[in-house]
Image 1 (tube, rainbow, N blue to C red):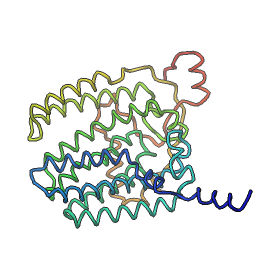
Image 2: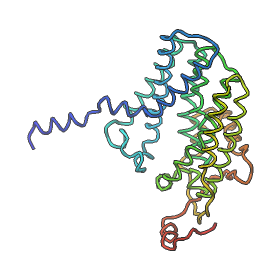
Image 3: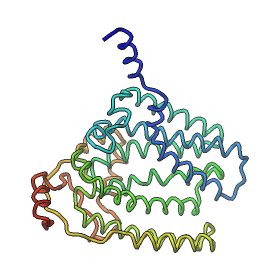
Image 4: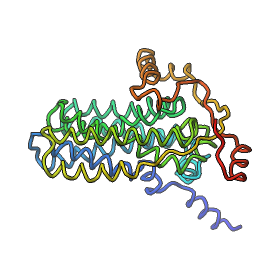
Length: 335
């Protein structure tokens, strides 16, 4: 191999702009931009278009910073899952230290600039959202409880509240209602995807509900949260956010959502899998009062008992041998 070839190979190994852009989770950023913009538009305050543009830009950067820090911390899991193994860190395009520095840098810039462009309440709200997604969800809940996406989904529901805060410098019932709609939509949406990615989470030993309690329990949860979302969406129509257009759209879309919610199916035989993060490690990451509060929330979920998974330190998933036997027999074994 010639020296010229070696030089070209080294150049090709250098990360490019596209690799860093992929760290930001651009598809998630699009949702952040849309929901934050809805919060700004729905607020009873008129802002200058330039202020709106700048605020949305830095809210999006804050969301991107969360994505980068998520990929930094979860690079070990990403390397095990087919869906994520080609991300910048597992593929070797960007190192963990580079992603960490990039994420923290963007987080600092987005918070400070949003404070200067809009107000410091909105900036602190953005900072809390980044903290919630990176620490509460990524570092703790995702590896500790099958209710990870329920509580952790709050991070994805905060952008409309941040948008509202940009316009009003505060929180109101309307912004909480917008938060609640996204909060209730997240679990059935994500669990539906998890049904198709169960093997990935099993290999990575992530206690996702599809892994710990099987498809039947997951589909029961999907149906419950879908019905709850529909009821809440219809309730929102009688508030100041609603109207005939909203009510008509909510009826049609939620009817489709409820109709498409999966029916229950038999569960499978379970074996033990340990979570990959301990309570001791978590208390080193976050203040102990916050840890105790979140632990209590996990153990006292508001969902009915018949669909609420028990909180344990050990979770159960089918072993590879059992799965092979299930496929060969063409039937699912009851627990």
